[in-house]
Every structure is written in structure tokens, then in C-alpha cells.
Amino acid sequence: MSNKLKWGILGTGMIAGKFAADLPKSNTGALVAAGSRTQESADRFAGEYGGKGVEGYEALVNDPEVQAIYNSLPNGLHHEWSIKAMRAGKHVLCEKPFALNVAEAEQMFAVSEETGMVLIEAFMYRAHPQTQKLIEMVRGGVIGDLKLIRSAFTFYKEPSMNDARYHPSQGGGAIMDVGTYCVNLTRQLAGSEPTEMQAIAHLYEGDGVDDYAAGMMRFGNDLLTTFTCGMTVYSDQGTYIAGTGGTIKINAFWFCEEGFTIIKDGKEEFVSVDEPRPLYAVEADAFAASVLGGAEPWMSKEDTLGNMRAMDELRASAGVPVE
Image (cartoon, rainbow, N blue to C red; front, side):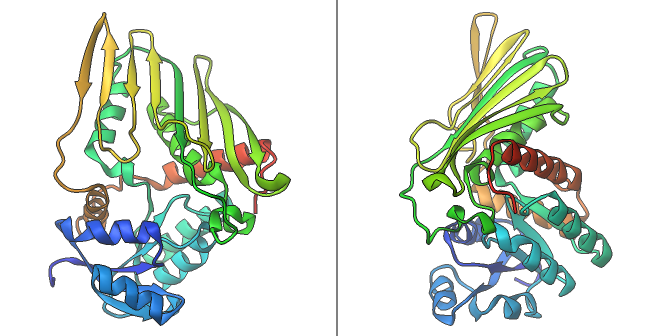
């Protein structure tokens, strides 16, 4: 373990468990501690995934054994605890969406620059070589000039006020939880920032967060894009990209479990990248490459800030509460 990046996980929820389960399959990381609000929850998590259980977030970020923090807390706690972790000398991989708004995100990056700690938004699918290949091929003109993109990320889960995703103060809602993937991928495929955007949303119980929403973005004069997202609706998780020379169809992309199909000149070509490591292990290794090797992050500061600006504008246009 001495030559591996020593991780501490803030939070013991579902996404923390996914990261912890994959981390042993990484080449560079080892879990040494997980912090929860209660010792019981921390110990239960440690018993399942390894490391030690730590009561309280403060104790975890100040643990001298921990070198890097995976911040899996609810969105409303990303700003506070990422900053506290960096000031305690820890590098931070912060779950998406990065913050409640772009102003918080800018403050977080300012602390990263002040402390010299690496800070990266945890868009796990972006670290995977298959996503990087898609972006490279599209930007390289494999289907000509881009004209239309439509993307979806929805799931159904019974609504609960015990779920932070249903609290405006925690940056809840479908746009923040899963719409952010659609916005992020579309921006990357376009290679630029949207020049115009608008969203509409259904507000849970009339005045709460958006439990499902739809949006559209324009990039310059030629590229028009749409997306749908939801937490209370069965649909699909596909993306369809259309250009002057062909189309690309992706049935389910966000977890990089299958590739994509290029359709042009009446022929279909299926493209996938063989990657033996599970998704969060790939992400952990990519983070370690930035921390230990000085590699460029797969999610840059400019990319994260651009995504947050778009998220702020889309939520505001839909009448979604923005803290």
C-alpha cells in the first residue's frame, strides 16, 4: 500500500459504495478510511469495503493517513467539505455536480490554486477511454459537421424526502443529478460552449425540485441539441449524434458498459474500447495520474466551470430553485 494513493471517502451512500467497491481493482489506489455522521454507519461501510470507519467529516479530512478525498456527499455539501479537505492538505475528487452554482465552483478552484491541492470533478464516464475515443472521433469529423444531438438520462426511483435529491438546498433535481451528464457530453462533442439554451421542467409537488425536465441548447449557427432527464420516469439513456456525413447511435453510454455505432454510407460500424478495469477504478487511476504524475485532468477547471454555468442558466430558465 505504501506506493498507492491513500483514499478517504466522505459519505457512505450509494455512490460512495460504488467507488469503494471498484477502488481495489485500480492500479494506484487504496481505501484507508470512510467518514460518516455516525460511527455505526462508518463502521458498517468499512466492514463491507475495507479501511477504517471514522465518525464525523472533520475527523476524516484531518486524518494524517489520508492523502486524497472522494467527496460523495450531497451536492449542497460539496463546496464546504472540498474546501475543508484542501485546506487540510488533501487532494479532492468531488462528485458531480461539482457545486450548487458557478460561484461556489469558482471559490473551490481558487482554494485549489491557493493550496496546491488537485481538485477534479468526478465525471467518471469522462475518464473512460471509450468516451475519450468517441469525443476524439466526433471532433475529428467521422460523421462530418455536427448538426443535431439528442441525449437522455432517466431512471425511476420512488420519491422520498429522505433523499437529498428532493431538497433545493442540497442542489437536488433531475437536471443537476442526471441532466448534467447530457449537458457535459454535448458540450464536449461540440467542442464549445452553448450560445443559447432553454429548459422546461416538472416540479415535484408543485414547488419542489425538478423530478423530470427537458432542455435544448444551440451552439453557434449550425448545431442544435436537446436532452431529457428524470428521476421518476422510465425512458432510455441513449444519445444520438447526427452530422452531414452520418450518425452515431449510443444505447446506454453513461456507465461505459457498451460502445457506440457509427452509421454512414449505408454501413454500420460498432466501436468499443476494451478496458478490464471497472469504471470507478479507471477514474481513481486517472485522478492518481494527476496527483502523482502531474497528468492533465480528464475534467479541466474550464470544463467544470462551463458546465456549471450552463446548469445555472438551464435551471433558472425552467423555474427550478437555484440556491
